[in-house]
Length: 347
Image 1 (tube, rainbow, N blue to C red):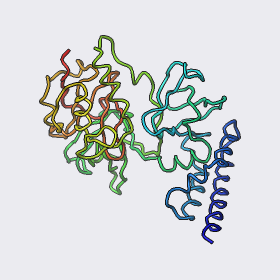
Image 2 (image 1 turned 90 degrees about the vertical axis):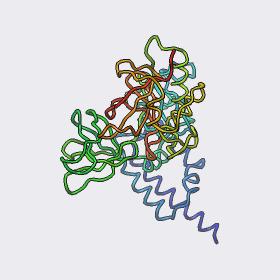
Image 3 (image 1 turned 90 degrees about the horizontal axis):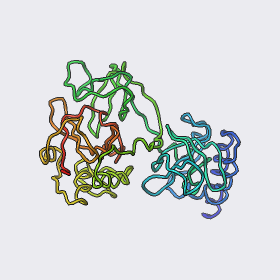
């Protein structure tokens, strides 16, 4: 009796997923999606603990979801990033990285490769590590998140939802902030590195989005950078997407901002405290114009009290353990106003 009910559930969910496929245009990957369903795609969806009604609702929601994609794909790697290459070959030049769970537009499939576009990156990825069709849509439903995007430069981020409240920091135009909620008073509650704050609704655009690929430009280093700096930054970047855990120091299981920094530098024989405020005094203060990959960038509240640290990776970018929602990520180093820059690698 239980087996019969289980089979009936699978049939119903399969029907719901088939409807999802009808919402997408026919392409080379449509046939591939059919194979996924036949070879266990539906069964893999049923492995999680949800009711039949929840599965049907997910399928119905996914049917009309697009988030700007016509034929969505989602990076399906256990950790790290999926290489995006200029040509459909493992020998092809790297043109970008598609982080775990990041989305892309699948242009076409060629043998074992998918031609994709994601953010500013276009190239080829191995189909083996890419969800497409109904599985990609259902996965995207779980991954989509809401952000508040600054539509003016030097946007004031305040401690409370009023113009007399303390300014916690400022963010540049185009920067994305974690969205929490919109109040009835004209203020949007956001989260920056795990701390709640407020911005005026007049100066942000709230939208749903999925993560996209990282360009190679974002991963490059400046000239004259020592080997140890290059190696340290490359080492740190392999943990992008791993979880944020308050008080943690594990690069794989979870770390907070200072725990991430101390664990990365520990590999290179540099001992740092497990505190962003303490780390700010454990090196030589430098100006932002002197930043090199491997230097530390510190952020604080409106009074200048340091409460966050990141590692500069070159090209105007930092890597940091941001918050429980985003984990370890790469950001523009001016995603919020830096209050101090420190050098702990003296080469």
